[in-house]
Amino acid sequence: MSESNDEPFQLAAEAAAAIAGQTGVESHDIALVLGSGWGEAAELIGETTHTLDAATIPGFHSSAVVGHTGTIRSILTPAGQRVLVLGARTHFYEGRGVRAVVHGVRTAAAAGCSTLVLTNGCGGLNEAWAPGTPVLISDHLNLTATSPLEGATFVDLTDLYSARLRAIAREVDPELDEGVYAQFTGPHYETPAEVQYARRIGADLVGMSTALEAIAARHAGMEVFGVSLVTNLAAGISPVPLSHAEVIEAGQAAGPRISKLLAEIVGRI
Ligand code: 8IG
Image 1 (cartoon, protein in one colour):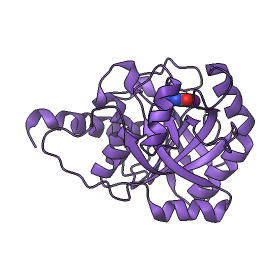
Image 2 (spheres, rainbow, N blue to C red):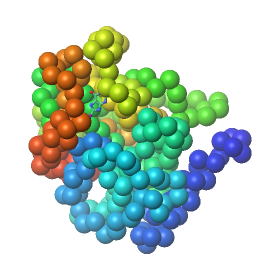
Image 3 (spheres, protein in one colour):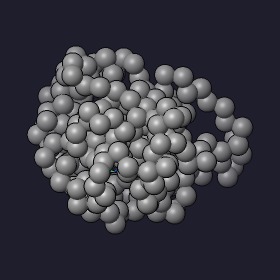
Image 4 (cartoon, helix red, strand yellow):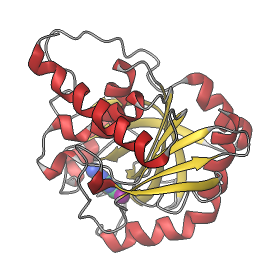
């Protein structure tokens, strides 16, 4: 690896050191990224022992999006696992570059996390998924035309979204469906034609996150679990236009169910 390609990993190591310094927790086990609608979903996982302002950790920026919190929390589960909760996701559409998008994931890896739980709010292509339905991510389509990996970094993405962890999730809730998540760049939602295109190439879910982070996590050797909250039917599937208010509302309505789901899954990892 060349020196410049090393920079993101050095910054992640600095961030991990700052987290260890501020929390006194030397190593974390599981990282959890909270997406739209998932803001409150970490409450049942365990006891929050530390809440950090993300802006004080190297490489993190506070988020400007309503529904995304700018904190990093350390949670101790009843089973004794340390969970690092990243409430401050950087999206590709913010224009800070792909390194910034995956900095949280690389920091989590540097902080010792061997498992990454990625959550998001997204549009659904299956009409059976009412707003507020959680769906497991089985695979992804990276439609961002970029990668978090630089240079000749050839990484296998077969079974990127752990079949083992999906099976655990279905033990918790056998009703859970799964689907292929397509990451668009955003920040606009898709046109109805783009949603049809996504459908034809195999997507079930459309969103603006997750795929780039999952790739960086696999590169870092983490086991990845992804779960989407369908907060709206994708454009053209639904007869009504999309609104951010609808997204927030669906997240709030689904809150209790997804909080319990997440806590039970994390408890079994
Ligand atoms: I929440 O319908 C949410 N995020 N691309 N499309 C895309 N991202 C989303 C959507 C959606 N809903």
